Length: 343
Image (tube, rainbow, N blue to C red):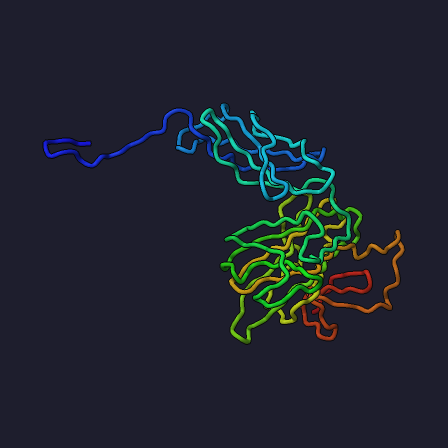
């Protein structure tokens, strides 16, 4: 404050943080399942504090929080000196998808909480998996919802306003929120962990709601991509697994996606990745994952020559055999499924 005979000036302020700083959040938190089935966490130590001062990683300890229910993280370990931790206190007799958070602590106190990281734990379920969302409830668990961009989300509900529809079957369905989302919003919902170890020809079937309103100048690029995660890897698109809402106007339509590429894999999760085109909701119901060849006995091959032949395009929509145009199709006869090229 400057002072003269006329009085005092307006005050000017300056401040500096002194001493040990509160640490920033640990970075790059990763969770993997070790050979014993327990999740092991690793992370990178923060090197700066919340007030910008350097932090000595050697002086930090850590606390670990776990969230199994998706409602409230609980502290399961404190005073950890290193940057790794194995959660041997988790019940791995039942399948779950715990999320973990890590907090660094200095002599000043706790820093910020890390971003979450999660993984499947417990035994994978054998095929078949069936989920019709009866009574608007999940009857298998855990289904994992992840918002991937711009607040994208799936929800379980019994009615959709845009497009206006109820479920295909029972009293519930999955809805990717496209109508209330901005263009570019994304979210994935994925199945429980499954084992395809004994599967010969695994196959995904579900009902998807197609809606084409081009005649009313309403054409939006909302679509869904079927993805797969194998042995804890990142989700990647499944061949023939893209379903664009305006590609048909058949409303509830059964779709078929062969999963033969994953036969023999021990840990598989199937994801449904919604992309908002700023248009309408995406509706999904009556999900079934089966081994379409599970009636085979040893090396004996049933005679299917007398059974009817069905053709599907790569979007899983049934196609009239007399209306095949040049392209790639899925040919199904009995339990035998093959890919053909029409030229």
